[in-house]
View (cartoon, rainbow, N blue to C red):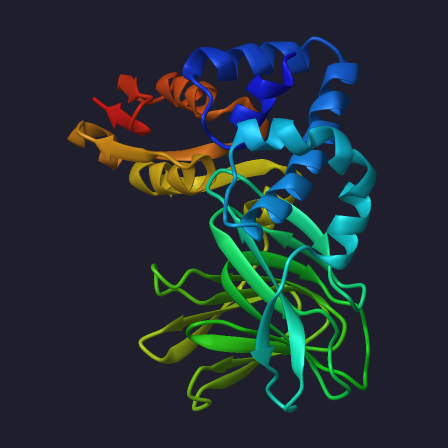
Length: 308
């Protein structure tokens, strides 16, 4: 498989025929699947470098820096790439801040300076200092991320977002907080977290298997008995009795396309199932067609899919 086609796919620029070609190639052998995952890791490193070097991120530039980046990729992923200077909250000394932006249709796995493991979902941005101070580990999220927090009782781990913040010591949780959607949802898998609204007036403490949702400046708590929704970190897109229109919104986030639903009949349907991210959106839509009557066409030039 040509690397140019793989990198177009990683960027969401591949055509329908190219996506099908990649899927067929990947399923042909376990070795091909391993090659795809290896190239994906390298692409993530290239993405981080390109975003902090004049914000250029195309597969042609990826090809240009591919060879020399192979040596540096592991180091770059570990320590972070690029920087901007800002005044730190509790110090007059300028320190380095890392900023990672994940494009639509992609996900990135990184390790923070304290050893915390983070998965960033599509269309997400994470900012964090090159080294945390002595009192806390604070970072800033716009989007969705899954955190496996390294325990440090002396330094609370704090994630700030547009509508609130989450504080933990050592735990696992998922935070979805896209500023354009105005949502703020925290789901706790392990440990205990403190969840606060941005003005500090609303505060709740979560135990495992629960979710805090901020709406109209009030938190509501829900019990979680099914974690398939959070298997996005494994490269899976999962739905459970989800309305068709909501599924299309999820596809827009993952694949970086605009979906226009012209067929009003599909809105009455719900769907339960899962897709591999690497299957591609055309494959996912064809699977949905087995249960829901609709047709679709694709404008590759403008990245629009029409549901008819």
